[in-house]
Amino acid sequence: MGKPPLCFSSRRFRHAVEFFTSPSLDKLECRLLFARAMTPTIKFLTSPDVAMRWYWIDKFIEFESGKSARSVKNVSLAEEHLHDHFPGFPVMPGSLMIEGMAQTGGILLGEHFKFEYNVILAKVPKVTFHSWACPGDQLIYTANLHDARPEGGSVTVTAMVGERLVADAEIVFVHLNSDDPQLSRIDQKNFVFRMNLLDILNVGKAGSGEQAAGN
Amino acid sequence: MPSADELFEKVRETLVDALGVDDDEVTPTATLIGDLGAESIDFLDIVFRLEKNFDIKIPRGELFPENLASADSGFVADGKVTPDGISQLRQKMPHADVDGFAKNPLVSKLPDLFTVDMICKFTAARLK
Image (tube, rainbow over all chains, first blue to last red):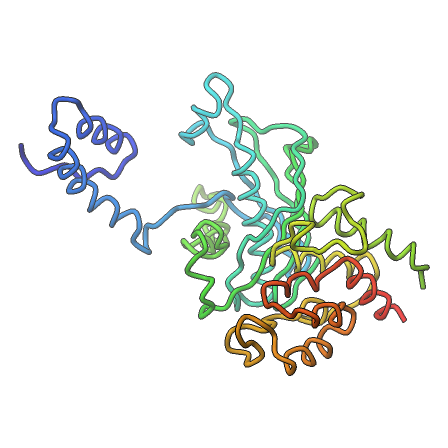
């Protein structure tokens, strides 16, 4: 047997899992091979540069500092999870809609304090799903900042597709200092600004493409 | 200035919204953590809601003091809050039942100082 493959894509990852867990392999040998094969993958996936690409908004279309922000999320069938959620009836998972709403509101809160704090998604006291969003739909998240203080803040957010209300939520964030011991215990996904999320603020800088087309 | 009943009703409403509990669970003697299942994160949410519902300002640590009797505070000995610690509590939490707590000042019972009644008294004092 040659060198175990490096598996970076989810399909290759699945194939690797199937191979290494096949009944023809001795259990111990299987575990060793699996561990060897997965080490570079795990290192790669958990390295700070690549850790997670956890973007659930595509760009901002309005941003009024300290008040409100509107962002866009284009739902696409290219997103793999939609094929499983649900087979034959692809709809954007509500949990990911909450992520998008939290990213919109969290950046609004963070910007208010010039990104001085680590903004952590702490609590969703209320969320109501009125409808759903399918591939091809464009979700518009509108966040309004209600509280902003050194300990944290709160926002209300709506998710609309056209004139149709899809969801609305209240979201509470807390601020943690970088030296807070609690910080290391928090799941990375709860950080609003890690994983280069602020790149979203740069999306608009590419322009609309009209200039490139000579219009 | 609302009456005591009106104030309690509004505090009850605030806690029902913040903690997702039923109306009848919110009684004056109910403890926020033990009876109503509040976690530290909920305290910030409660403060936001009280400020909005009563149009008051609650500076950090005034309603819910932080690091009460922590290990390095010097106010704890053998799992109990020391007399110095008790006087500190009286000062920081004038609306809590510190006298009742002082009878058996176990550190583990500190969270029981946070009651619905304490919030009502704190809010009433703010509205004066």
